[in-house]
Amino acid sequence: MACCSSHSGDSRHSEAPPPGAAWFCPMCPGVFSEHPGACPKCGMELEPLPAAHSSNTERDPLLPRLVLSLVLGIPLMALAMAHMLPGGTTAAWTQSPPARWLQFLLATPVVFFCGWPFFERAARSISSGHLNMFTLVSIGIGAAWAFSTAALLIPSAFPEAHPPLYFEAAAGITALVLLGQVLESRARRRTGGAIKALMQLAPPVARRLTGDSEEEIPIDQVRTGDLLRVRPGDSIPVDGQVKEGHSAVDESLLSGESLPVEKSPARRSPQALAI
Image (cartoon, rainbow, N blue to C red; front, side):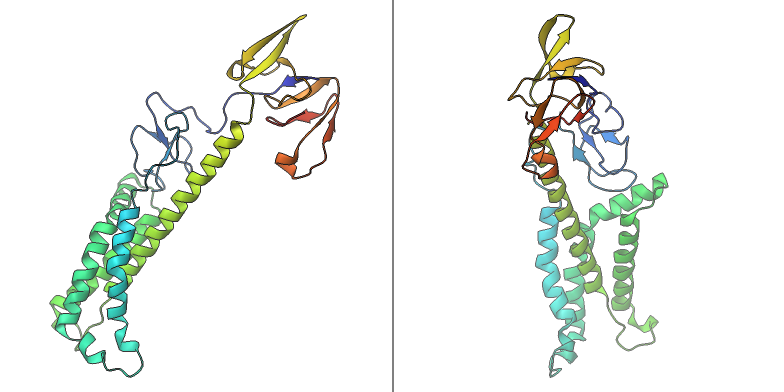
């Protein structure tokens, strides 16, 4: 079977990465970087380019911060919510100065160490004029911590005898956003690995017909309009249209249908499927 190639190169990115770029933003086209970090537009973590990183085993930089936020945040939540327990025997102690200062000591590392990447991304978003989710998160946790600290240091400035503290809210939001970022990063890495495995199913070479001769060429040398020969048992090297011959193609990888699909002239054949 001979098919005409519609291959036009790698189209995973809308723009070619500049020389030296090893990281890109999957959400913002055209954003590349030579170093890992956050996207200056949306604030999401940059992903490694497949050509620059052969594996997806990099450790998530936010994971240690997530662990620390949980270690400090869970006792903080229990301390802040203890007055809601039945019986109310601990209500008076949770409003005492030692308990309130303990909340401050537990929440401050969570907000300013674990949540520091959020403040960095928020500052970058404000300076670039691209406000994003991290702008709102930083304002929220920063306001909660600042209000609670003011209520702790100068309670006389508030009408209540014991002004409410929101340290647990600041720490809880920080931990939840970190958890979401870690889960999202892992999901993207797994998806990227699955896409790489799918692309590796394509054969490394193709048989190009030139007049009466046939030659084997690397897959990256295939150009739009080339006439390729695909023999029985081969995998289709690139997307194309059948010009001559007919055969049955296993398309279960795309459709889930186990029965082979008949291909004849003028029918399209997707890449990496087996004849």
